[in-house]
Image (tube, rainbow, N blue to C red; front, side, top):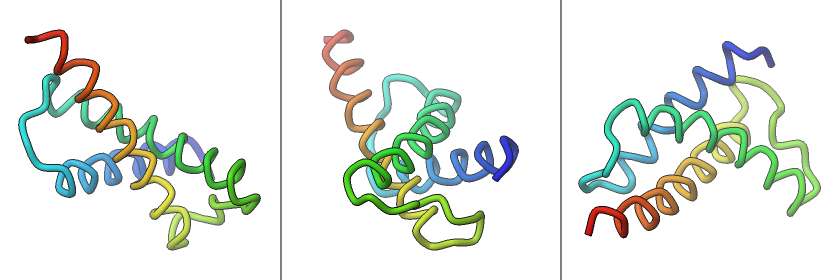
Length: 88
């Protein structure tokens, strides 16, 4: 997959992660999109390391989307923990 596909998957995975974890984010829409892109990369890497499978089969593969959303949820939760403690 190309870099444009990674960005698209990351943006959509970030939006899905935000829908799965509603609430007030310390950042905003831009931070959520960036976390989605990084989460897609994290999810693909975790799928390969932990399960030993190539979770990045293609743009329309279900395993690619699941890995991207799981990675985005993980990063969004970590961001809320770290950034939420700073504002208090």
